Length: 160
Image 1 (tube, rainbow, N blue to C red):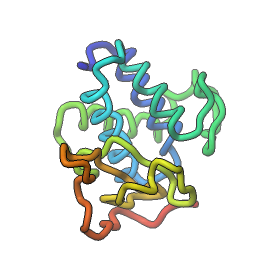
Image 2: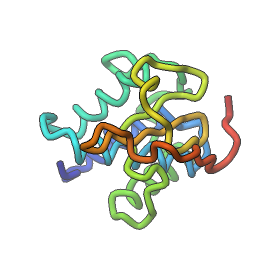
Image 3: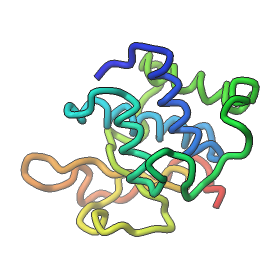
């Protein structure tokens, strides 16, 4: 799935803003890569917004993305005048242009470090970045990529 319109870029940036707007720039880059990795794998989703809704839902957000475990202050209409959002938008564009490496090693799933969803019990995280554990999908033999390796602690301390 390709990001082809400004609306796609905006959907991606707003999702990262909702999930990691208060996290470090490194964590925001990691969350952006996670969504891009999901877009590459979710062939049944017709658009970027659909993948973003799945990621928000998986992270505990409401279907419309208005309520969730972390809330960003301010009106959505004011986001383009917010310097923090504009810097995040630049990071999203850098990821889409592949100007920055993927610190998640291709992860498609994640959760906050202070939660333990059932699906994560069978997987071993490959990175802890900000407040999030990141997971790769299983290889064809059923083992998660990175199994047997220790979790890499990356970036800054979480803000929680």
